[in-house]
Image 1: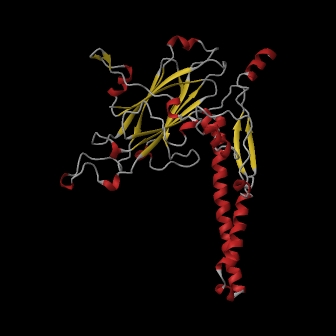
Image 2 (image 1 turned 180 degrees about the vertical axis):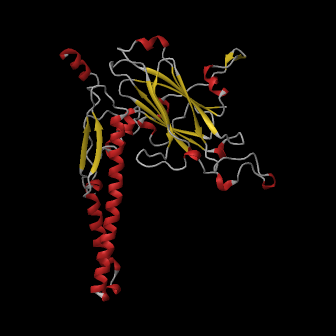
Image 3 (image 1 turned 180 degrees about the horizontal axis):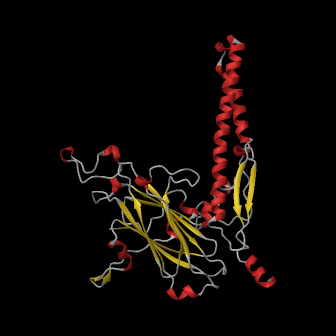
Length: 367
C-alpha cells in the first residue's frame, strides 16, 4: 500500500525537510510492518548528468529517526534504525532505504475475546517519527532546478504505484502527489476555519510536516510582528473601504501597558563559494539554536536554585516571617524573576540568500 507520495523541486541552496509520523493503531491493515519502504527519485532527465557546469543536477538525501542527535551516541540502533543518506543522487537515479518500525509499538492482528483489534486503547498514541531531507547540490546556476519524488509504502511493490495504474472506465486511477505548497496555509487560513488538506497522503496512520528553506531559516520568528501579522491575516470584506493610514487606537487600548521590548541577538551567517545553505550552514544554525535553548534551561534552573537558597537563608535568619501574608512577600519576588527572564537575549540566526552565485561569478571573472 502506498502511504505517501510527494514531488517538488529545489534550486541552489534549497532544502526540503519532511517530518513523517507513523501511528500503527490508525493503520487499517494489520499486523504492522517491520519497516516501511522509502524511495527518493531524481526525476530529471538522465541527459542532464552531463550538464555539470550548469548544475550539477544532483541531490543529497537523508533519512534518520527524529530522536537522532549527531553529538551523542545513538541508543538502540536495532530498534529505531540508523541514519541513512546518499550525498550524490544523480539525474534519473533513485535511492531506497528502510524505515524501521520499533517492535514495541507494532500492532498485532487482534486480541480475540477483548473485542477490539490491535493491542488495545492504551497503545493508541504510540508512534514513530522520521525526518527525510532533500537538499540541492546545484552550485553554479541560480536558475537550475532539480525535480524529485518521495514515496513511502508498506511494501516494495507499492512504490511503483506512483507511476500510474491501468485505465479503468476511461479514467486513469493515478494517485495525485502532494507538493510543498499544499502544506502551507495562507494568511487568511490561520484562524483554522479553512485548514489546508494534505495531498499525497493516503493513510490516516501517516502525518506529514513539510518545511522548506524559508520555514527552516525563519525559525524562531523575529519578535514584534505578532500584531502586524494578525492585521495582515484578517479577512477583507468586498465592500470595505481601503485604508490609507492606520487607524487610531481606541481609548481602552491606550490604557494598556506596553509590552517590554525583548533584547535580540542577531547572528548572520554567510556562505562560501558553493552556496551550501542547506547543509553546513543549516547544521550550524540548528546547533546554535539547540545551544541557546539548553542555555535558557540551565539559566532557569540556576535562578531557581539561587532563589531557593535565598529563601532558605531568609527563613533561618527571620524565623517569624513564615506567618506573614504570602501576598506581601511572594509578589515582589515573582516580578523580579520575570524581569530576570526578560533580560535574556533572544538569539536569532539568519543567512544571506541574495549572493548565492555572485561569489562563484567573481572567481570566474577574477581568475
